[in-house]
Length: 339
Image 1 (cartoon, rainbow, N blue to C red):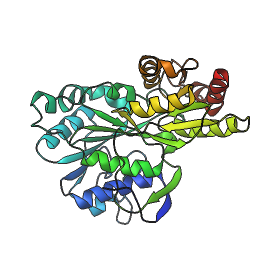
Image 2: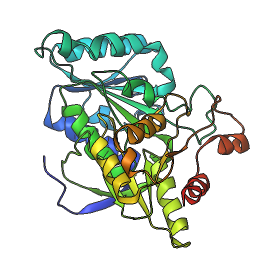
Image 3: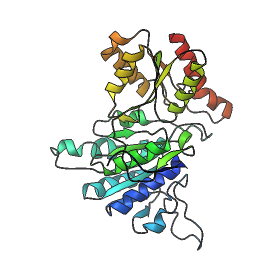
Image 4: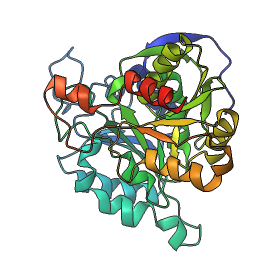
């Protein structure tokens, strides 16, 4: 597929995700959708729309594809185990894992099965599996439904992990994920699901493994992923009022990671701030900081700064949750500290 060229409409990210699923299912009869309440049980009163998953993202699809939108038992291990088997036998399952917090209950099919088959069988096996899962805090969903655990899947060889920051990228990345012959974890940050951006109508893909500069600058680089890209852009606006030119890089893909794009923006500005919704230890922000020291040391005019969530469970209290999360104000503070 090529870059989008037709007219765009302004729609929420959730609608763009549903549109990608609809396109994928219409163009390939092997694509199936599985998850808890993605159809809503199939016995709702006439004229009542189905549930469409925990945030109603897939509402309407079961009516278009009644044999390929499958409600599952409440067993994440069962869902992922079934999906891996389905992928190995030729289908292209898309699994909805309600919250990424639940990955601990179904990690083995990903860690030891889906991620390893192509390697273990010398490239002869393929596992075209996509796992859609909601990440991030901000909706007072508390400690068990608000974590950003993409650092776990990004650290597993054989898995791809992507995280869009806007509706257009969400559509293109999801189509690329579904059509990939490798297992892909598709993260849906709560902070962007109901934000609207221009989305082209046609079928297109965003290449997995390619970051994008979404704002050019020369004094400091702000690297974000998912919802933190918006924080970085807001921080860049604030810094501009002080005469500071900030470049913003949207990672889009965490595994594979576009190291060249990260090093290129560092070489341009000499200063880098990473903004990550996950906790600071062993996360993406720490990985990027290590990359910059290892491969970009000669470019650095100061330390790599990390703006992350706090190293604690996600609080339920709105005030505490806001203090827990990264923010544009904290990004501004970090950037000013470098300058």
